[in-house]
Image (cartoon, rainbow, N blue to C red; front, side, top):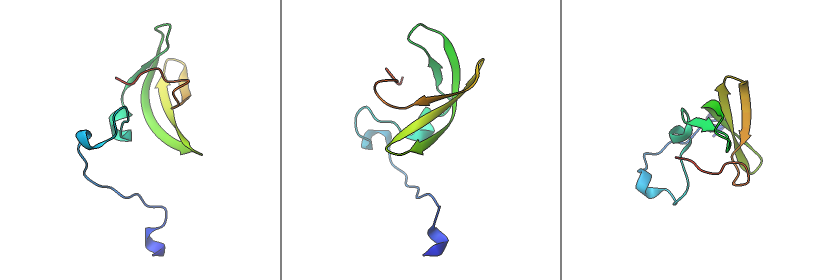
Length: 78
């Protein structure tokens, strides 16, 4: 069992199988991020988990910006 530690479990699951309003990480990487004022922050380059939520790593004109993936910060994912 030690050989499984710190690994990822992968499964092939269709987009129709995920809960409504949720996204797989690989679907979010590469998405362009803009503020509610229309300023483009860049593209999501990575995602990591902290506690009970995820954080989007956004690379763009401002450099690296960390965006908490919580409803009070992220208005929409398209």
